[in-house]
Amino acid sequence: MSGWQVTPRLPDHPNFLWAEAEPKPAYDVVVVGAGGHGLATAYYLAKEHGITNVAVVERGWLGGGNMARNTTIIRSNYLWDESAGIYEHALKLWEGLEAELDCSIAFSQRGVLNLAHSLGDVREGRRRVNANQLNGIDAQWLGPEDVQKLAPIIDISTDVRYPVLGATYQPRAGIAKHDWVAWGYARAAHALGVDLIQGCEVTGLRREGERVVGVDTARGPIRAGRVALAAAGHSSVLLSTLGIRLPLQSYPLQALVSELLDQVLDTVVMSNAVHVYVSQAHKGELVMGAGIDSYVGYGQRGSFSVIEHQMAAAVELFPIFARAHVLRTWGGIVDVSPDASPIVGLTPYAGLYVNCGWGTGGFKATPGVGSVFADTIAHDRPHPLAAPFTMERFATGALIDEHGAAAVAH
Amino acid sequence: MLIPCPWCGEREETEFHYGGQAHVAYPDDPSAVDDAGWAAYLFVRDNSKGWFAERWLHRAGCQRWFNAVRHTVTYEIAAAYPPGATRPVIG
Ligand SMILES: Cc1cc2nc3c(=O)[nH]c(=O)nc-3n(C[C@H](O)[C@H](O)[C@H](O)COP(=O)(O)OP(=O)(O)OC[C@H]3O[C@@H](n4cnc5c(N)ncnc54)[C@H](O)[C@@H]3O)c2cc1C
Ligand SMILES: [Zn+2]
Image 1 (cartoon, rainbow over the protein chains, first blue to last red):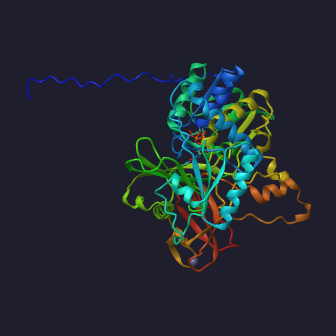
Image 2: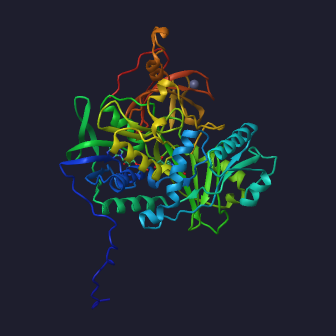
Image 3: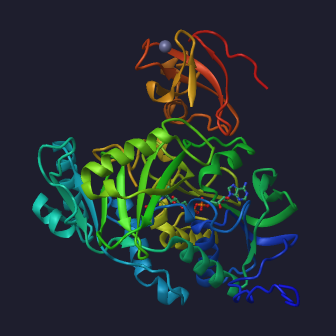
């Protein structure tokens, strides 16, 4: 091969969607956490409220948390009026989001089935359909045969451990490509003047008296008129620096994908009772969510027994999955509240706002919570859709219990 | 994860049921506790990133409760001890 002169050359990098910023000494608003919620909040602060002197400060990389680890299910068919309010607000925004952000997010309204496997599930499901309809949300109750029409690969025989007794169906529900959503908000926020700062862990909250006035970070202090936390599973860690204790427990939640397969499923199927939720991505891999570990953990992996349990149920429900292979599994740290509803709003400290407790189901809320949290921060009062989700509800007893019959929510 | 039951020794985690934070005492004078106090007692637990004392039930084994001090990032268990015993000092 002598005489060959090889100059290794990579193709040029495609255009960057945003430029990395160095932290400035001060901002009007510092948002902690560049997941979907933090990025959307920054975007709506700039877009809807003209507050553009904003930084989003991220410990790792943008979208490296739960935002790009979730199974991307979007739906608004929650039981209580408070939840219907915020999740349906989000779904309406999803329906216009590609135009709003001027980019593709592969939003696909392919419908979501929530299966019922027991009499308790059936009652809960029918009740939820009725509640949804009263709230103007598209919802139907389907019997087993209609379930199979939408998802022919489901086994609806009656002699199995978890027979399909019916399902709720929300046609407008669906999936989107989660990393594209994060990048879409990042690009749009950056274009409006928001600084996106990665690799910059917030280590403490700076206060003067009863007011929070900035953050300490791995790259030095940053002053802020207002500080907005959107740190998902690490919210307790941040708040504990001020001595604030919230009713949150953090657990790893896992998901997995198969190899690329022919299209066999064009809707989303969820079964809370057996912890299976599955959709087939555009490329062809089966995307499946599993359950949370039973014990508190910040190890971003999760217990193998959870995957085994989930696979057993998935293969029973979809017998042809027995031929598929698990390509990879991963985990994200989710912050779970006692009533499976989030905590959004003001705190005992002026200038400090929290958005947390979305647990296993906050991806679907991304545009909704971004707009509502931004409004809360801009006006220093809870947006009406956020007002029920205060931390005070645990003392007043006005809980918003979204566990459903199976005692889990995604 | 292998969990060391004080009575049975190390067993696979699937044999155990989790009981959350250990050493959370029932209020001494319940009638004196206000709503905020009850909310704190009922709903609020430490969510430590690091060493955490927690309760476990060896459900598929001796069926006894015990406490363990576990690291919530590495999942190392530094001590397991009977209920009623004081929390060992770790780290
Ligand atoms: C496996 C899995 C499946 C899921 N499936 C679904 C689903 O199908 N549908 C659904 O609606 N929801 C789902 N969820 C939940 C959803 O992903 C979360 O509720 C949502 O992503 C949380 O908001 P976020 O995007 O802002 O969080 P994240 O992306 O986790 O953002 C929080 C960010 O804060 C950063 N951070 C933390 N501490 C600090 C600090 N001290 N300083 C600076 N930055 C910090 C983190 O690095 C992280 O990037 C799932 C979650 C997981 C893990
Ligand atoms: Zn034992």
